[in-house]
Image (tube, rainbow, N blue to C red; front, side):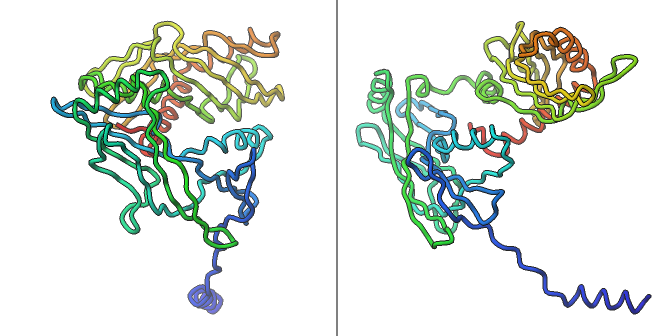
Length: 356
């Protein structure tokens, strides 16, 4: 036995590990006359190519110093051209993994006319120090220039700043270099000076709940007792978007309190009921109240209710809304939804979905 163990150890020690095959872009993916990405040597993975660099969530930050105005901007890669393709693939039930095309940024430039101001600080590609996909420009304007910019922004279409990004990527055919546009559209609202600190301390948080949908997978999975029997819920997805205009936000120390003013969120709930062999996809209106701990970005739901459901199977609706409402109000489910909302919030902050 010792001999066999010794041979095994020697084999493991002297064996040469198998080398993994690098993931590579192969054939271009065309969509509406444009190359939006590439297939890869792994049929499960496709690379998506950035069409342009655009303002991060259309957000800017303006500070007035008395003599000057400072405009802070962050640009991120945009895959808008690839969105319809990705959406259609997912609608087919595709399990493909879509990744950003690996690239090396060569150069980035924001074109600024003297009438507008000058770039004072920038984060642009550097051969060794910076390969972040995000670009940052701080623009300084005197009062006359800032007045010109605001006047142009009031024209309706807004003021447009442009630039270019040069990047290199690899395929099995070799190295390729291409240019993408850099576009920033500033309207009157985006040029408003930063609000006071107390109100600003809430705005970034309000934005994450109100500007995009939240997706929670598996939060409703589990067994729901109906007395003599029970239902097993699986493959659940909660989609919701909070309405900031119907939600009161207030600050209490390190906590932000969310109080619903009636219906304050809409979205969808989808799930599978194993015993009934039934898939449900329901349009939902919610009433949600809770709090957010700013120290660790954790969410605690005090109450969550489903005010209304809309389903193609109207005969099942009264049963479903009663069952789901009772289930979702249980403390165990509220804790799971709170946990998953916390993870979603933390992920968005850390992944760079929020700035300022």
